[in-house]
Length: 177
Image (tube, rainbow, N blue to C red; front, side):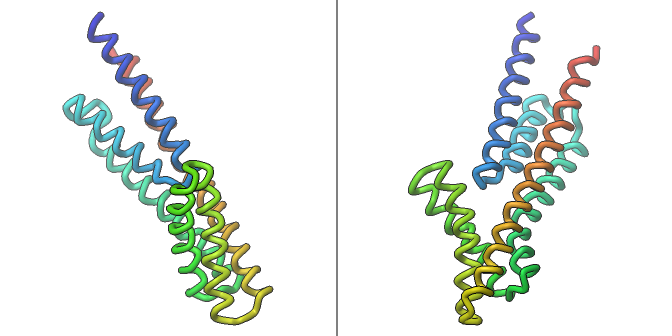
């Protein structure tokens, strides 16, 4: 009975941490890596847990892919809007700086606003600096912003997929004798 209660408590704690990881993604934080860290702890606590290291390696691969998609999407959006590489890099740097400043100003909401404003502002500033053309810089900044939003949606979708696979593995584990 004691062992069953510990197992249920462990799974409930893991479930809460995994849900928090999704919320982290929505505010621009690396929630996919929280999923990986939680599953690593799970594996280590259970002494090479029932999911196996191949499963853990797949999670690391998916987390890396999700982060790359989010990171590169703003840049791709700026480039798609015919922006320069400088404006694409401005979108990336602006998003990071905006997220940090937004977090300092107002955690969670400020982070979201900061990332989006920073992505737009960074792409705009670099494109305007390069071309001195306001309309073109706005077009590129909008492209960077749309790209960033698409990248975050892709990252969130991959994270939900990671969680569904984890949930399936946990359910199968509980059903085993």
